[in-house]
Length: 121
Image 1 (tube, helix red, strand yellow):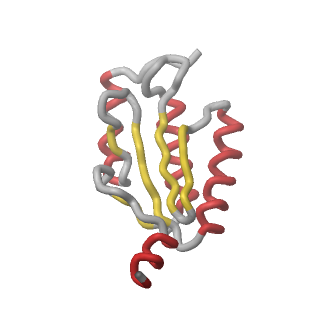
Image 2 (cartoon, one colour):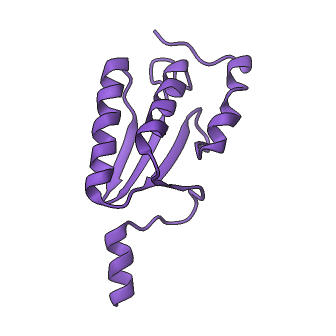
Image 3 (spheres, rainbow, N blue to C red):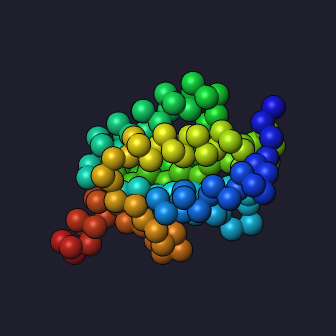
């Protein structure tokens, strides 16, 4: 069973913050949203991340809308952040490559097809 990160281990989290991971309000979890150039790039990212998650036996909470992938990491076994979350976050950052990181999670996030539709309307 995984254990919660200690206060000392949590001191490594600001480095994740620099890459766009942020605390989830009212949860001991982290979240990041990426915008890829296309649906196929988003899907390829999710495929690589799924394979890494399976190897770790640690699976993200995530959603995908066209080119946008929204990920929350939390270890359900210990109901909070564990080393598994940090490991998977770092792997996902590598897989995402040059994808745009959405830093403001409080605003609605439009996918590429919605952005195109709004320009046409």
